[in-house]
Image (tube, rainbow, N blue to C red; front, side):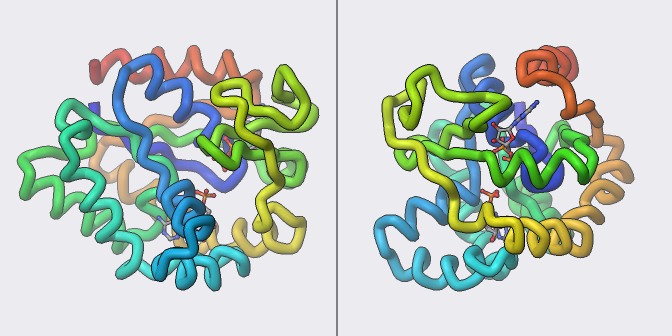
Length: 216
Ligand code: ADP
Ligand code: AMP
């Protein structure tokens, strides 16, 4: 099962990804999580990525593509993987397809989580993220069982620096200009499946499972 999750920032990709990978026992590859880990560890990659992330811009393709290629070569991706937040440009999608072809693999489905703009700002400004495992919560829509603590690993919940109103607006602009074209890219390959992301988290997950059972 080789899956890509697509959708604007705040659509619920990370939230659904955690559930999907648990259900299907495949690795969750989130480029955002990889960058945030590198930022926390102050690696050279983290330092470079931070300059872009803090402004709501995309990290350049040449820094991003190789990270994903390395990750996809790891043993645990042999039986499948879930990409979350990658690809984000047509160039990345083409590089991914070429790379997978070399491995005799292909993306089977691009699951697009659709959420209208008016829901996004409130979702993102209320988002809290586990510093440890990257799990996503919302102060109102999906609060943790214990305030400030991750349900999954008990790590501390923090607000992302790029979840301020101004940065969210920039990220949405970047999405429209650079990531939205991927909808046509996967539709042209007959791989695009849309689900409504406005319903409750568990309802969205049921729909996702309904779609993904075809690829089991
Ligand atoms: P993405 O990974 O697409 O940026 P997240 O999964 O982090 O988005 O979700 C963004 C915010 O919206 C989080 O605070 C999350 O708890 C909340 N959220 C996710 N799915 C839903 C939903 N179906 N209904 C309401 N809030 C949601
Ligand atoms: P996310 O956690 O997916 O919301 O990503 C957070 C930030 O990391 C984005 O706003 C980008 O700055 C950067 N990022 C994540 N994935 C990519 C990608 N595939 N290409 C470029 N930048 C990315």
